[in-house]
Length: 333
Image (cartoon, rainbow, N blue to C red; front, side, top):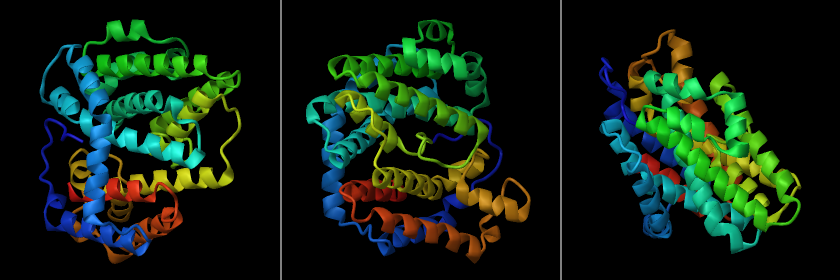
């Protein structure tokens, strides 16, 4: 995430303290069975970026045509290739896990990329950009999001002033169009799975606004669940996830969140953003800007033990090598 303008605090977590935490997280992943072969991981990531390159170029061009400038918007557009490649990897993992027909996979990849980009804007608004949240909030509610997901959202898009807000609603519109196209080509059951997708995203929005705990529906942390639902839309499936798949989605989502919180600890500290590791320290010291000196061994151990436990839970899954490659990419970037 980009650092919020006007931050007045230095970032003590950006030096050796942050590097030490990232090293501990890598060790915890390895101890849980998610060891990384650097050469294979790099090959996997190169393939992911290559598979997503066409969609990334199209999305970046579409966003740039919305107009607007500024460092924040340019930084967001510059990150499109990485977010699109990540979405491509997650979509491929969902198809591998479910065994769904690959016919709809290109559409699902693009739909998930749109979802990941829109959720990144929402995440920034929640965590660090009050102006963005104010304008986004003017048009964003349970009712407006549900209407957008069901029918599109031209009016909210036309009213938006900030380029990131215009981008958010354009991404939602494009997501809806692709989902509708997938559903129209599927069997009759697609209507039920599409409705389930809308309910899940609404639940995720409510969870994010209420800062509630992670769940399988918390798709801001677990795009794998949205990818699973996209496979269901494409195949016309109305069945609930198998319990094993549901557990895997929960574990993967929580692991993404915990590792991302280690990787982003310096920016989250600067922006006073939610961060599971920082929040543990904040509660223990009673203020919003703890220093590395406030980090106690029990807090570190609890966080790293949970990372190790979650890594162990997914180490034998078909998607494990891809998950591992992206986690180490975040920790080494």
